[in-house]
Amino acid sequence: MKRRTASLLTAAALAAAVLGAGAPSASAAPGGCTYTSTSHRPVLKQGSTGASVKQAQCLSNIWGGVPKLAVDGIFGAKTLDKVKWIQGCHGLPRDGVIGARTWAVLYDPVPDCYDPYPR
Image (cartoon, rainbow, N blue to C red; front, side):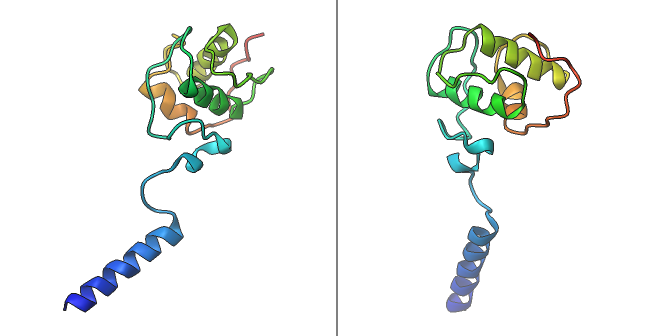
């Protein structure tokens, strides 16, 4: 019985690995954005800096909009405009703050936005 259970657990683990199941890794982020773990989602706003800002900038570039943001880790005016645009595309408040709901849409990009990109 113990051998059979161990074999089943080994088979399940192998299947999960092959199918990509399990905890998300940084490499699972869209667009190759690997500045932070996909589970690290602090609240960010204009003036924030660091790796999490780089992650948000990288993810936001997947959305389109011209120009693309520099992935420099500084949440400045251009990042603020881009975040507000993405929020508007999803019916979120256009407050420019990257909280849980905005992180969720950054990680699940849908490029079909009919809002004009701010110039």
